[in-house]
Image 1 (spheres, rainbow, N blue to C red):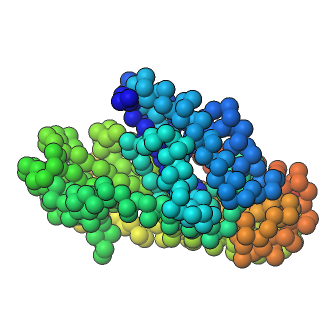
Image 2 (tube, one colour):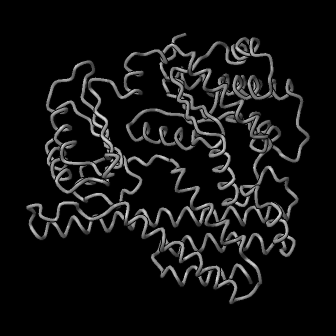
Image 3 (tube, rainbow, N blue to C red):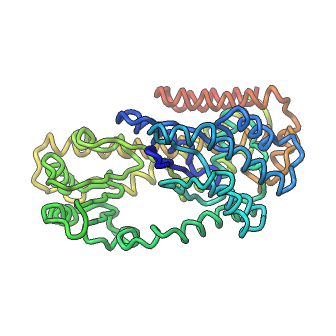
Length: 457
C-alpha cells in the first residue's frame, strides 16, 4: 500500500538536541497546517513506555546485550503497527525521535552486537518501513554528555542507564552514526559537497576578516553583487553572514539596504550568538530561528574560572563567602574588558556619517558588548551549577566518571562530606534563583554576594 504521509526521523548521540529539534519541526509543520504526529523510541505506546522505563532504569541490573536489543525491537514493532503505519496511511506525517539507525549505532557499534544481522532484524520489526528523511545531529561526546548532566541537574534528576555508560561506549555510538551517514547515497550529492566545502557557485559565505575581526565594506559589496546576478546551478542565491553582529558601520548600511529591497530568489542567513546586539531594523526584516550550540573556548575559560574560585574556597562563613563572590566579580570585569578590546569602536572615526547615526552605531556596539558579557556570565553560572550538582552526586556516592569536574573529585568529595542532601539540593536552587535575578537585571554585585552567602548557610 502506498503511504500518503511521510516518516521523518531524528538520530544522534546523547545531548545532540534531536528531541528538541524533532519537536520544533513538528510544531512548525502544524503551524503550516500539516497533519503531524510526534512520537519517540523507545515508547509511543503503552507497551513501549513500560519497556522504556525498564530499559533506562539506572537502578536495574543491565540486561544482556541481546536482551536489550530485542526489547528495543519489540517496542519498535509495536510502535509501527499501532501508531506509525496507521498515521501514514491516513496522510499524517510522523516525526519520530530515534528509529532503526539507533539500533545500528547503539547495539551494533556501542554493544558490539553482530552488525551484519541488525538490518534484517530492523526490517522484521518495522515490516520493511523506512524513513523518507532522517536528520542526523552530530556532537562531540564530551559536549553532549555535559549537556545531559546540566539538564538532569536542572531537573533534579539522575542520568538514565544508557546516558551513564562510559565515554568509550558513547564514542563508539557516535562513530556508528557517522559511518551510517557516510554510506547514504545522498551523502554523495555534488551540490551538498560543494555547499559543505563552501564552493557552490550560488552560495556566498562571509565571515569576519582574521585581522580586524569585522565584516568590512568590501565584503558587503561582494554580497550585493552575488545576489544581483542570476543563479548558476540552483533556484536561488544564498548568502551566509557569520557573526553578523561584527559588521563595520559602512558594511551594515549596505547590508541593511539590501535587506530592505532583497533581490528575487535570494536567501540570507544571518548567524550570531548575540542577537540583541543587532540593529533593530535588520532584526525586523528577519525570521528568527534559535539554534543550540557551544562556544568551546569561552566555555573552557568559564569552567576554569569556576574551578579556580571554588577550589580556593577555604573557611566557611559570611566573610569568606563574600570574598569568593568578589573574586568572581573581579574576573567577570576582566572578561568584560577583554570583550571590549576584541570589539573596538568603529575604526574610521572620520567616516562621513550624521551624528545621530554615529551615536546609533555606538549604541549598537554597546548592546553587542553587553550581550556577549551576559552570555559569558550565564555560562559561568551553568558551570557553577554543575559544580554543585557534582557535590550532590558525591554525596550520593556516584562514581567519579560521572562528574563534570573529574579532576577536582578529591576537593568535591571533601566539601560534600560537610553537606546534607537537603542542603546540596537547596544550593542548586539558589543558583537557579541567581540566574533568574540576573535575567531580571538585578544588580550583579547584590546577586552574587547574597547568593554566595546563602550557599554557605
